[in-house]
Image 1: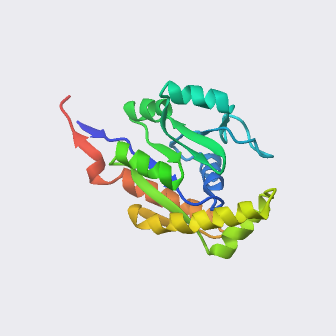
Image 2: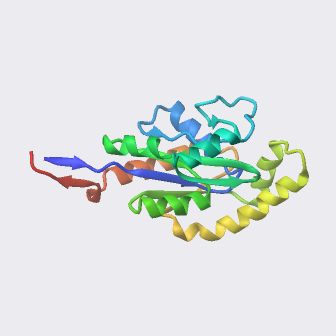
Image 3: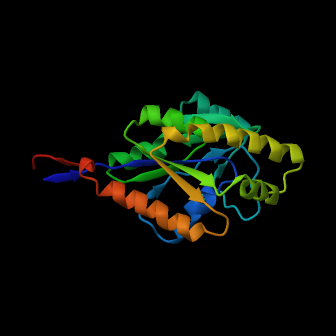
Length: 200
């Protein structure tokens, strides 16, 4: 009997590159994969839905979950905390379901250490101008916030060689990006190394 090995896909990339938009497009297309919802202490943005886009909680509650060791990885990013709960990943992999999780570069290295067989995808913008425009559209209170994120993005781009795939997400070309990420996932799912023989 042949058994399929479930895959953890790690999606990463700099702030503003379009990770959330890409995952929303995958969900809208009913692509069959389990999506991990990141827990955060940041304020909810217009159009976001609690429990769907992120799990929004207070910093006090977040620290309680840290103490209870509920997170596989967590970090403080731009003054807010973000974390990936252990349960969302473990329970789905254990029953044989593929999972995709969105993290920053720091989180990627933590998860890759915990799940060395995970497939990683790094999302990059068409160019720095596109990334700057996307960040400016978020209407941060200070221009310094955009400058800081661009600076960190340039540092994060130095780690692209650590990823299995690098995928460009050009402005206005989200459908192309969606098509490409689906091809990556489907290719990995049919890889012979993702199946094992077992006795009935």
